[in-house]
Image 1: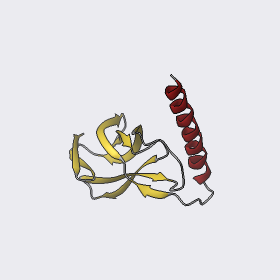
Image 2 (image 1 turned 90 degrees about the vertical axis):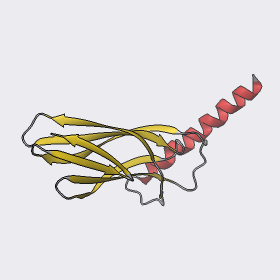
Image 3 (image 1 turned 180 degrees about the vertical axis):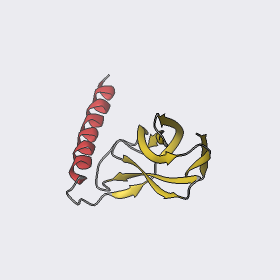
Image 4 (image 1 turned 180 degrees about the horizontal axis):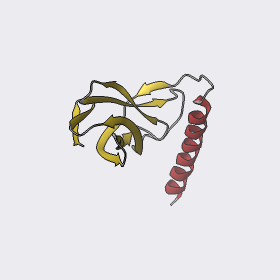
Length: 129
């Protein structure tokens, strides 16, 4: 029981340290570095508009709770859209080494009727309008 209490206290301390460092980056210019994000699934949301607006909800895991997920469209050639998914982390943060689930939504773009492909890393996610 004493080990369990010590683990809970250590995790709470690490989580508090991580939350403070992630908040500090917004507009402060702190030195966060790029890290991995492990994509597990992509779900598409098609908005009722013309042309149809498409959003992708990307679900996966981050290496630790101190990492923050980032997804951004990096290229679009009409039928193929490339999205870069990664994480940002303060390299000085003390954090528990456990996977942390994430979910981010990115605006893919507006599309006419047709077949398209969303590329994330080496994986392709086709969608049809």
